[in-house]
Picture 1: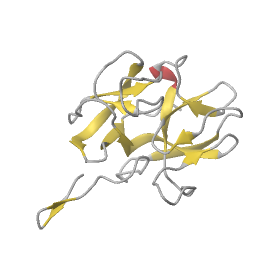
Picture 2: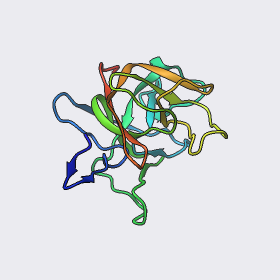
Picture 3: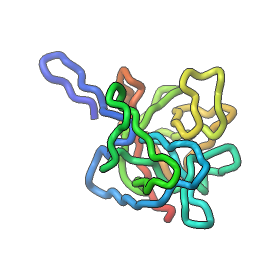
Length: 168
């Protein structure tokens, strides 16, 4: 939640931060060899061989099991807040609970639908695969078990979402 103190607005944090402690479930799975890096706060899918990869064009919303969190592993670039899980890394994944993510398109509404991009978009700035959006568009799918928690969006396009039910 965004706070205020003496007329100042606070940011919501960084993508991939677990934002509430009440009902979080976090699991760990290995990132598939030969796959793209999974940035903190991006959606992941579980393959039949029990390894994960970033959600992609061939995946449906039913395959999305959670979101890569910013936990233990630190960013490798000290000039940005971005970090990633690389092929072969053990990736911590939030499968139920609340987390902060980048929202690249639309204005979130509390309890509103959450969409995840499955194909790259040239028309949206930072319209990368695995990122989240607040409105339906070609190249994204609705996550049926995920909602925007507060509907707030900070100046860095960070919003809070909640995964309502566990898929694994």
